[in-house]
Every structure is written in structure tokens, then in C-alpha cells.
Length: 367
Ligand SMILES: [Zn+2]
Image: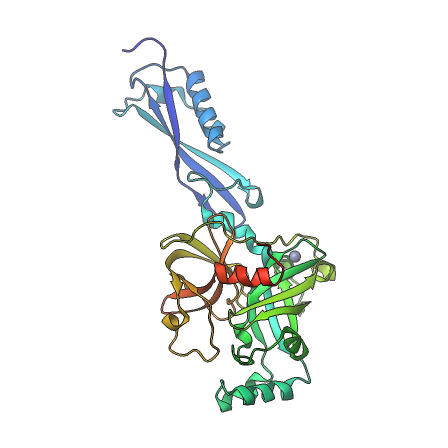
């Protein structure tokens, strides 16, 4: 039997579970005893566990400190006792992730408030002009041109600037690439003449779904196109904050914080997440790993009728129509790509240097 001062070492082992609205942040606390058979006071053990739990951002460790005294006399060959720790927290109050606490996916999830659904709707009198452009470019088979003159086109967008009274929303351009090539680009002004641009924020859509009124109608906020890069597949939209529709037809009272460019050097096998909004499916989140950082466009497609010049990041996640424009987020929840498309079990994202080059030339980023 040992005598003298007792020493206790604690560590919180990761073990996490969560549901959509709240997270159960759990851990298993491993307590190593300096001497397995030593009689340690419950006060000493409790103090060590609480201190370690707080150090690792696990306030719920205090719950584990109410250790049954009998456990202290357990005959553990490795000199270890194990207790579980659980604590419920509101999702939006979660601490930043560490290797022990919140999983990256759940930290990223609240970034959905920066993501918008975007719908380009042809104006009533625009069909003749659209048909004229289609006939001139000849990138679309003749039998499909008529349908395109009346068809709306959807994509995902996300806020890249929220500093003024207006939000700047970045999205992809290729949903309109029947109207341009790199050699025959179309201007933002021309698109604005042909299409109404409707958007919905995550808060509005969430309240719309909770409303059980029969025959309810989904209303949209009106955005305006201010920039387009036909070579890099990027569009910049502008919407006045007071025109972002919220609950009950009033301006949305929630914030739509701008996502910022990643500061990380992207490498293969790095974990990333995509937050997309295909039609009527908000908060479509997928996680995966980077499989290649700099694909050429020709590596991903046999044909390139537009003449895209961007570099693409390849990620092993699936994507779908309407998700284009979705942000690819790194472990800091900063964007590191914009969804261009996908096939054969992977997706390609416009690379960060291409995005930053466009945003800098448009005055959104400073060098
Ligand atoms: Zn909102």
C-alpha cells in the first residue's frame, strides 16, 4: 500500500454525438492514478477532473466529478479509472472546435446563415433576345434552344461582403453559360436585362417551413447582378440588407455574415465541407477530403464549349444541379472553393486563387 502525497493525471478522450438542433458534447475521462492501489481522497480527484475538463473546454466535467467513492477502490491493472462526461449546449453557442471537442461538421453547420438560394428567372419579354444569343453562339443543340428561352436557372450563393448596407453574394455563372463563351462574354448589365434574380435566405426558408398555413406562398428577395467572370465561372450579386425578406414579409432581422477566404495551404487529403442549396433542399451539407488540388479543366471534361480557364480542386464528395456556387469550407469555416460541378463520385471546385483574383478585381478583397 502506498503512502504519502497522491498524484492524479486526467485526460478527456474524444467521443462525441449530436443531433441537428443541439449537441451532446461528451467525453470519456481517463484518470490515471500515480499508484493504482493508493487511497486518493474524493476531493483531490474531483478537483483534478474539473480542472482538466475546464482546461479542455468541457465544462460538463464537473458532472463527472461526483464520482462514487467506491470506484476509487477499484482494482484497475493500468491504474486507470474511466468516467463518462456529458453536457448539452445550444448549437450556436458551441465553442470553436478542438481535437477533443466539437466535430468540424457541426461547427461548420451554422455557416448556413451565410448561404442563399439563387434563382435566375427570364424576364417576360426576354425570350426573343435569349434565342438570338443562343443562335449566335451555337453552343446549345438547336432543338434545346427554345426551352432555354423560358427556363429559370438555380444555383447556390454565399455572402462575401456584408460591410455596407448591401450584401455581396458570390455564385457560379455556368447555369447561364448557354449565353456566353470566353470569346463572347456577356456583361452583368446584359444579364440584368434578361433575367430577374430571386434569392432566399436560410432564416426565411426555415420560418416558411415551420409555417403550417395551407396554400402558403414562398416569396423571394430581389438581387441584382453586378459582376460576371465568364472564364472563371463566377457571378457577384448585390442585395440591399433591408430587402432581404424575413419572417412575416418584413426585412430579415438576422445577420448574414460574410465568409472569408481560407488562410490555409490546401493539400491532398485535407478535410473540407460543402454547404449547398439545391432547389428546395436547404442546408445540404457534405464532408469529404481533397483528392487533388489543381486539376485543369480538360482533366474533368472532354468538351469545353465555353473555354473555362480556372483551376479546379477535386474533392471526393457528390454534388448535384442547383448546388453549383456552393462554398467549400476548410477547418476554420473559411471558404476555399466554389462548386463548379461533379461526376463519377467527385466534385470540382473553382480554386481559391481564381476566386480571390476575381474578388480583388471587383473591389471585394484588397491585396
Ligand atoms: Zn436571413
